Image (cartoon, rainbow, N blue to C red):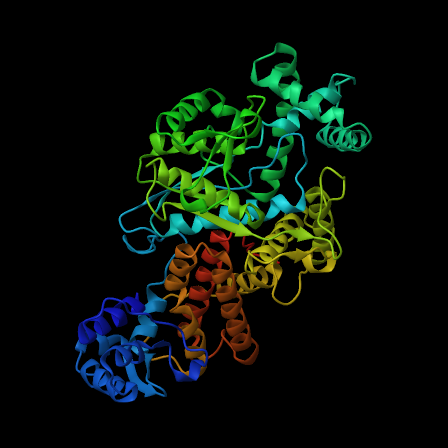
Length: 556
């Protein structure tokens, strides 16, 4: 990458390995900028402008750097700006990063030397239809897994289904009193809502539900049969939704390892906690872990009635992963930000056990989908179902054509883009117009831009794979955006931030459409160069959308 060549040159003239290179906010200043002179000047007690000029005088003698950089300038208060050469711009177009390309080995690593990651995402609860909230984890996690793979990681995609826990005691209690034949997943969630309404009037129902879950954990046949019924109904529904969204998992034959899979692995983990002196008795003889210096609140491992919790099962899950994939695997959980404290406790405990190193456990946080005046709640039946959102998106997408497949492609692309274009940590106030948006900064805008490039190339395919003279200034405006694609992918992967890639793709689409609306491609005296430029834009948009899990149709 051009960026790497500039960084290597800067490392040589400064003697510093810690070089940060950014894109200037004003593209007239150049294609890359660094504040290294300002940083070094503070350490060396020098004038940053003078130090920047000293560094530039050395850089100008670097023949390898000058092949890719045409101009190096100093700006207040000591920034060094680089303008990429015409030769490098052309070379980047002639040798673009194709949809099947990988970035160089060693780039994009979150931990030095670590190249394997389990990415856990989606993880819906059994017996509940997909709500709009689970859409966030599903789409963000899938994009993160794609980005890590694009930067050279071996990725294991896991769907940690919520198929165990006290909520099943509540469902089992209700299902014992109804005819289960022909029940759907929405019927199951209705029963769950009914339970909570009844429990408000009769609090003893909570104890009865705990008793039913305890029987389930102990293997009571009827409770196991009812539980399996809930699982079967749910998996059928989940597969249908994942097929619509184009989501796949690699682990456990594509099903993912649900919580129940680790049922028989829990006791050895509890025994290890006991042997290492980490398990203490709390109130009513519940078992907890207390953290040194009260760094975090105590973490409950076993309830007073002997049943397990999320923490118990998550510990068993991570122990299984470390044994299966290797002790150097990075484990990434894409889960809502409301679980931040819990994951901090879990990660700290795994370090106390000696299972993982610092930074080997990652929590990607996303905010809530919420209403203007309240949170969504499954137990109150106050939620937006993903099925309803997809159906409305498909209906709205029909304006792009009557073809049913295209409508679905555009609808799903719009929903994914409207999620991935934003920083996931922020809460989203649910708004039908916003989530279904297909104008401006939207999935259909990117899809249409790609379709435009495909349409141009369908009429005249570039015959020559060379450009005899440099780009003109209007062509350069597009070429200068294209050079940043590899580093954008790298940055998005390192920071687990798909929105970085989405923002870049939108900027590229805007730049290309501005060029196309003002200039001719076909029939222009520079047609060959402009066709190659168009082809490169199409390749990058298609690859970028693919990394975000969005299909790029050839026609719209």
